[in-house]
Image (tube, rainbow, N blue to C red; front, side, top):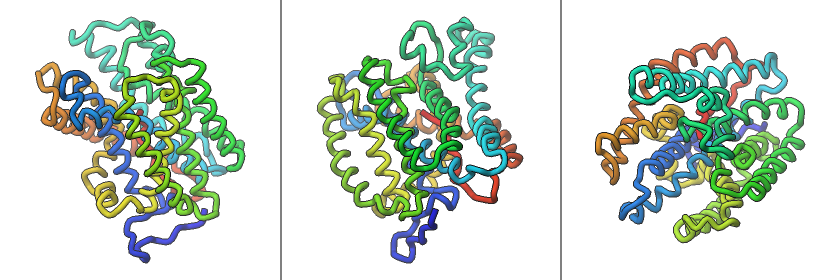
Length: 379
């Protein structure tokens, strides 16, 4: 991939090329994703607050999962393309993913299914109902047999990403970039077709119905490394789509939310993924404007982005705890939820996750090439 010049020479500070490793602005984007998801789950879905401005914006928070998917597709595909052909290519990728994701995930399951019943905080869950979570298949019964499963509902997105991590590295290893783009197109088509064939509310959780966000992000990573200008050449398109398509989706969200129109349900996720891909292009190329760029590159959102995986995992439990304590609703309740969720994620990072991440040094990617930082795998 041809290196991009530092945009500071042209008066646009902060732009970073994907091949230069960690891209700080994407920490801010990741922070936005987890914050709007928390807002969606924490803001009351009934009563007058639902119809306030924040209430209407909170509904859009469900698309934070789509933003996570686009981010994961972009970052993971970048890692795979940059390390393709190196020694222990697949082994290093999978071990590093395991070290990033599994400790917190299985610690949470152990607490829910073993410790809580022992402490009489909750009832025992039969193994046949919890089994799906232990093997990352929870989104399948959630789609086709919801009564057959008991567990953290928001973990469906972690299953989708884990399925992506399982098969995508093999396709990157076998195909060149041109063929990978064809696979991306097929994945998007498969998502649309799946939502048509299995049209019902729970299709939202099914892997085949949610490949489009990951595929769009993967396409961005491929284009960023094709040697013909990278993502900079897409800036005019990104601006146009962000303004036009973004406004259209915002209007439909305010006017059609809850209508469950078939056409909207089928195409919504794909269109949202495209809008978020445009946001990523503009963010990486520093074309979002001075204030948004300063916020996304700032310490606050950067810190939230760093702990976003833990925040995604813990936020429903924190919300439930606050609700039990009578703290729910309005801006104060939302602020309390965000702060306590951040604290829980920080503690998890310091006490558990960081210790496992240190082991990554034994599984560095080959050829001395620096690669983009691994994404925190969230909804």
